[in-house]
Image 1 (cartoon, rainbow, N blue to C red):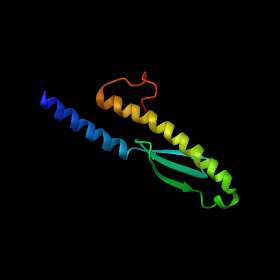
Image 2: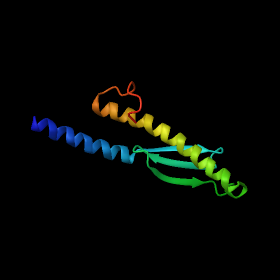
Image 3: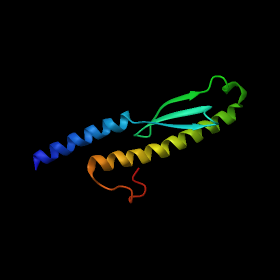
Image 4: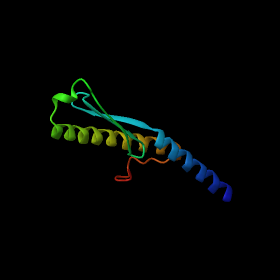
Length: 99
């Protein structure tokens, strides 16, 4: 049993690193704002189109960042479910709210 626990623990550590390394992009404003999120739903970076950002009001930029983040987070959750399902062999698609 201890051997199985060690194996499972190793798989979980590998899974955590895989999710940390996963990169997903969300964009808004036809690419004006791009938000990159990892598989842990943490923001990795935010990019603005330097050619167009000056023509947008600050309040609109804030809204675009939120929109891009929400898009990236949703995609990240989907990819995370996929990665966890492949790694564990469990079908997580029927478990609402797990990610």
